[in-house]
Length: 300
Image 1 (spheres, rainbow, N blue to C red):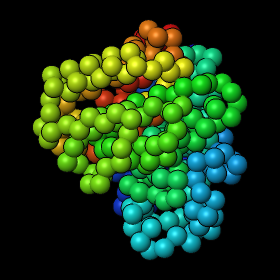
Image 2 (tube, helix red, strand yellow):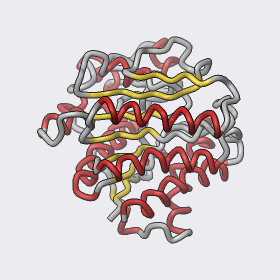
Image 3 (spheres, one colour):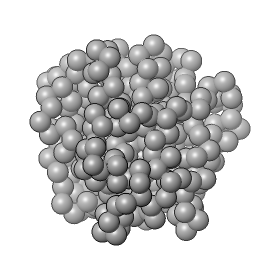
Image 4 (cartoon, rainbow, N blue to C red):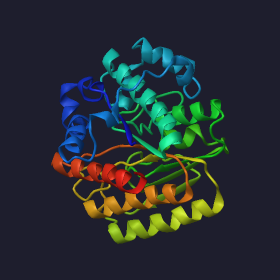
């Protein structure tokens, strides 16, 4: 059974002036239920990640400043959200959900977090609406339980997974692959194991050809036994921050390539939703809904 992490705190903890693009966290479960893709039994309320799990990735001093709301004004500006207890609680819940998704994926082949993919969070700081790096924390959890030996992180959000790249820069057990807008945020890129920078306006044909080629190269080079997938839909042509030109069908084909590769190689995969900032929220919901449809079709 497809298991999906979802909590109302994903949306309701956010500041009012940031609510619109984040409404997807509330609307997506409703759409999945409306279309009959899943039922209520597929959803679970995530647990809170523990401090012990957080500090496997994040510096203790950074966590203490987060928890006590004592980040400097410059550190808060880099995050982009006003700091609050509710916001910290949200990140704790997201990271716990991604860990639980990893456990479900080991049994079921795939699991999905309605939120997550907080790839701009570094070990010592937050950036770009990301405070705790959920996929990095979950990867370390799997290593600590000796469930896996080699992890692949596939990050297809339009923005480079800079925090993730830096966290795992000296860890051969985690292979980081980021395919992103070359001129987009962050201006200063970190070095992933494989970075593919795309020109502004790259369309379905360009994108999918590059993705297929690089996935083939990755699986020819390494043999991962677990995959984390950051499936941001800010690659859409309609996205006002993305600057790429993928159609919804192209975005769906992107997801199909990644999920099919995991299925064909017998590798458990956790999918986190990442970014999406199209002015018409229907575009965001449609693209994310396609990801869940594919998961059901390919794995169950």
